[in-house]
Structures are given as structure tokens and as C-alpha cells.
Length: 115
Length: 112
Image 1 (cartoon, rainbow over the protein chains, first blue to last red):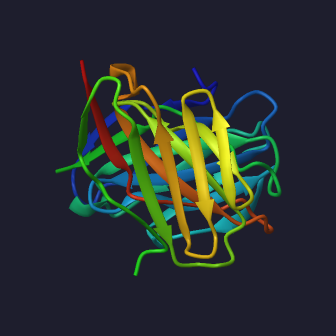
Image 2 (spheres, one colour):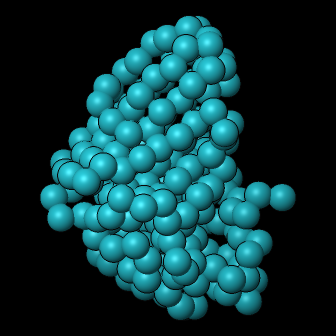
């Protein structure tokens, strides 16, 4: 158990809808990362937050947004969903923002299916 | 061209075999390299990391980095069925953020 909690584990929704994925980082970790994993694209970095502020941005679509709250949990909002958004969404956490060993602690993921 | 290229496999080997997993990368700015292991229906977990060229050993696992050819490898000795998983190579930059770029992952199956 990595200590990172993600909810929901599974989500099925329709095109055009909006969903929110939630992540609680390991106790004491200030950085939260969101990754998308699909069969054809692999594990893609979306965005990183450190202590409530956006720190790094990857291949995140404009339809997606994220935030990190004062209690350090994070939410990833996906809107106007398309079939191609079906994927596993992972949250990861680490103690610091940068300059670390690069070890990220991943949750078990939220599997999103868009029909 | 993807920043990190990795053969997706699957790679199937008998128990006890030596396994070689490989990645190439295109960005010379990458400063650290790591291997993550992902079991089915689980999140990735860090297996090994290294900052420099050369070899690093940890039990049955050896990570090898060749910065001149932008090539990294993971060797698994005496492979076990419990090693069956997807192995992801990753590169990172020690910059403002902590962005890691992952390869697509290689599926390994160790047959007993």
C-alpha cells in the first residue's frame, strides 16, 4: 500500500459529461501529480501541484483542470468527455517539488470509461 | 518521435532466465533515470533509480545507463513468476517541477 488514496476506483459515464477524480496524498507529502495511462499512449504526465500551487504542466487538455486544496488533497476535473478520454488516471505524491530522487508514490488509479 | 521509446513486448521467459529490458531516450537534458514496476490493476512502484552512467545493482536487479548512446537497461537475474509485471522506464529533470517522462512499458511474463 503506497499510502495514496484515489476515488472512485471505477467510473462509467457518457460523452459530454463531467467527472471529478479525487486523490489524497501520503501523509506529509506536499506534491501531487496526475497521470493518464492508456493502451496507446502509455503513462502521460498531466499536471503537478506543490503545496496548493501549480508547479509543472504536461499534456493536459483544456477540458481538464485540477487543483490542490489546503488539506493537500487534489481533484482532477474532466469535462465535455470524449470516448478517447477513457483511461486509467493515476495520482502520485512525493515529499518535495523537485530535486528529489524522482520517486513518486502512486495510487491504484481511477478507471474511467466513457460510453 | 517520443521522448522515451520502449518496446511494449510482451516478453515471455522461463523461470530462472536473465531478462533484459531496454529503453532509449531523445532528450540529452534528462538527468536521472528510473525503473518502475506495475502489477496488474495496481499503480507503478519505484524499482531502481540512478543519476549517472554505469551500473547500479540491487539484489537480482541491475540498472545500466549509457548517456552517450541515450540507452538504459534493466537486467533481472534468476527471474521469478512474481516478476511478471509491466516495467516502465522513466527519465526526469531536476528542475522547477518534478516531471517524469515514462516509456510505454514492457510487459514481462515469467513462466514457471
